[in-house]
Length: 153
Image (cartoon, rainbow, N blue to C red; front, side, top):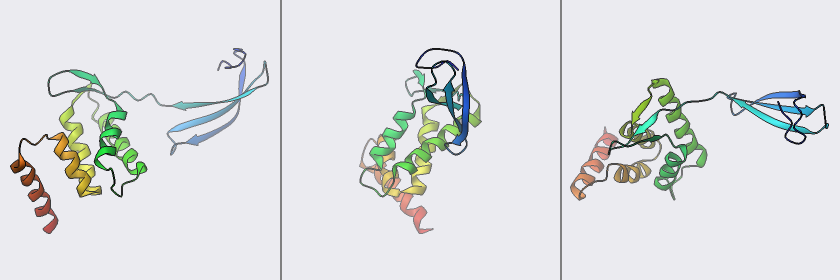
């Protein structure tokens, strides 16, 4: 590993620890040239599929978009950032396990809606109203009735 301070290639590992629930290795290193210490992180390169949008465009999966949409849906609700991050991590694992090069945006939306439905019904309805872009109040009410029907069972 090249030293970020003096650019010498001779560095040694002083300490290694697991981080982020064992998904990352944190290494403390020391440069043999200048004696300075620095930290590196080693993680598996995760390749996520391209997202196929409704109009046929393809774009790289953007974790930030998923987090942002969930944050908006959960605004002023008792849902913490850790729970939102957990939903997005679960989504990423789901996408990786599928092993496909492309995934329809519909699949992503449905996965996030299912997770939200279990976590907070109000946030679920907010997310569904944007994701499904209800054309009128009838469609919206149908979704609410379905949610209330599931609740009474």
